[in-house]
Image 1: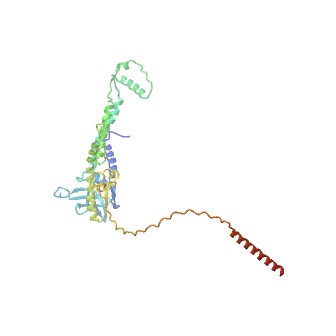
Image 2 (image 1 turned 30 degrees about the horizontal axis):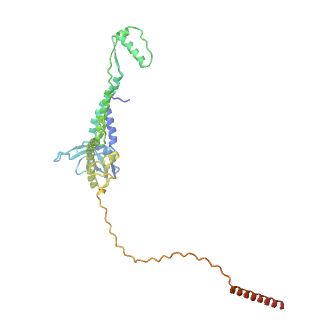
Image 3 (image 1 turned 90 degrees about the vertical axis):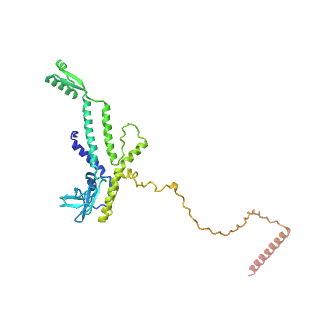
Length: 354
């Protein structure tokens, strides 16, 4: 059962839920197995820093006590590390013995930010719970003596249980008085809900996730939306720059090639708005101002002109002329027929003689 009065426990749980979200704010590539991403981010986001150094040839991330003789800007120069699991207890130089990763330029971390907002949320939840209790009390019953009080409590209990109750004596009416209740109207709970939304939106905006905490109960114009975007990105951009700078030192010191960039929804929402980052879908140049390149072509040799053959119009077919029988042709034909008959007769006579 949720105990709304256990504020410290509830605040710690809400801090944990927020850290579970922000641990995916950045994504690393080519990290050694001994440097889990979740552990490096957990250290930086909760304590503000993580120190990476070698222990027996393996890289590990540690937290510890920062101190030593401050440098000219008052920054620590040493770290005291005590790790029972590795049996590693040493005081190391931040400059020479490893690389210091910081969450942001002031080593604040995200935990103080979450503590502040979640404390306000926990207090507001108590107010909301109490408001819910108060709305149940429409009238306050007062009794003049214990006997009347017991009778009134029995009557109320039966009413709560849904049973009909009968009052057996007039003394109850004489000894019981009804006072005005403390239940508030709907306006009070709406104020608490809006306040809760404002706290949550403010916290999400701090970590680069745009949320509307508009208290006007009206639509935001586009200019107001752009102002919200411009105010939420500088901090997360500073976080990215701190990680890039630390990785540059770590890669150079230990011969690695680790990379980092925004992850999860931060990659889509923040990366397209922060400085020096161009979204993938946006062209690098304005295409409208780019002149079309002039392509020079080789000269084409002139081909000899070939005169076309004259077009011959089709000739209409000539109809065949039927032969005309003349007298001379008929005479020749008769001579031929007679000669053939004579030859046939000679051949037959010769056959008979044989």
